[in-house]
Structures are given as C-alpha cells and as structure tokens.
Image 1: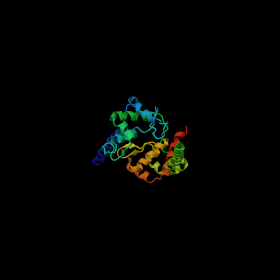
Image 2: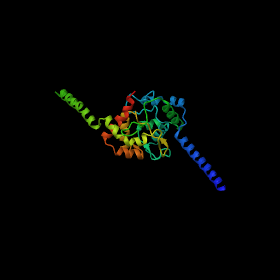
Image 3: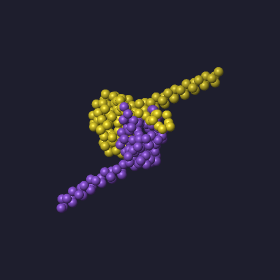
Image 4: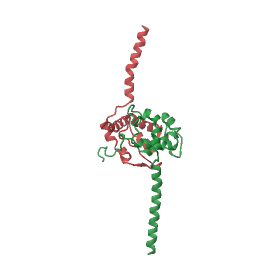
Amino acid sequence: MSRNKDRIIMQRALTLSLACVFALMSGAALASGDIAAGKQKSATCAACHGPDGNATADGQYPRLAGQYADYVVQALHEYQAGTREHPAVGSIRRGNAIMQGMAAPLTDQDIDNLAAYYASLPGKLSDLHGKVQGGD
Amino acid sequence: MNRSLIAACLLAVMATTPLVAGAATATGNAEAGRAKVYTCHGCHGVPGYANAYPNYRVPRIAGQNEQYLINALHEYQSGDRSHPTMSAQADSLSDQDIADIAAYLASFAKSP
C-alpha cells in the first residue's frame, strides 16, 4: 500500500519535472514577439527581403515569409555574434558582412518582433516533408 | 588603329566573360536534385524538427530562393557559416550537387 503511494508520488514528481522542462524548452523555442512592432521595424529589411518577405527580385536573398520564428531569431543572433563565440549561439556563426551590419543595432526584443512578423506572413516556404524521392 | 585595337580587346574581354562565369557556376538540374535531398529530409523534412543546442527549429528550405541556397551551402563549405551538421553535409557535396539541390528546392516556389 505504502509502496504504491510512493510510486504515485514519484510519478507525479516526474510528470511535474517533465512539464517544467517542456515549458522551459518551448519558452526558448517560441519567440514572444510582437507582430505589429516587427512590421514597423522591417522597413530596412524590405529592401532586400521584399515588402512581403518573399524576396523575389534577387534570388541571392532568402525568403523570410512563413519561416519558423525561432530560426529567424537564431539567425539574427548568429549575425550579431559574427565570428565570435557567443552564449546565445554556441559555436554556430555567420560571417555575412551585410547582415552583421543589419543585425548589430537590434535588441533582443527587436529580433523577437521581426521574427514574429515574418513568420506570420504568407509565403512559399515549406518543410521537405513529402518532397523526397522514395521518401514520404 | 590604336582605337580599334582597344575596341577589339574590349570585345574579346566581353566575349569571354560569360564563359568564365559559366564555368564557375554549375547549372542546376531540379530532377537530379530530387534524388540528392534524401539526406536533407532527415531534418528539414520533419515539420517542427528542432536543432538540439541551441534549441530552435531547423529552417523551412523548400521554396527558398535558388542563389541563396547555393551561397549558403558554399558558405558552410568555406566556414563563413558554421554549423557542425551543415558544415559536414556541405563538405560532402560537389558544386553540381549544390546547384541541383538548390534548383530542386527553389522549384517549389514556382508552383502556384
């Protein structure tokens, strides 16, 4: 009887700690950005990435519309880090000179807002799911 | 005489420039790329699949612009962009592989 009770307590503790871990992880994964504020900040980005985030004029610039917000956040932090080690990005870096200059003045909140804005736009980006020969 | 020589030189330079540029960039074949994205699919084909550390979702790359994809893969090769997994993947690709993969991925933006 008491062993059973212990087991229930253990299970609850495990569930609770798993929930905490999950909450922390999803907090990091989902940027808490403000779409309207991001749109306001996006005027400079539009010159290359397009006014709708679809970057069609010149194929060298990536489409941002419909991209995962947390990937955009990561990318902007990588540009800020440049070629340095940085706690936010670890050993992952990007040395692109144009984007390093663009990302440098952005605050973490600006980055979250921009990412939320571009993720919210309708675009042509998708996962590779179902687009592979012999795969599904 | 002198002027026509200069003109001839200019013409010669103009005529060879596209050839040089053509040699530097492989022309992508989307159909060949379709067979080459099998490995990419392991991460980029799983909706919402996340990079472990730091924790963020791997980007959507189907429908991305062709030249951007070509540049990104070459930057992983050169080290301008560093990501342990992507650097290893890019190192295994030839210029032709990169062009084919980029052509295939970009083709998804062309369908309505």
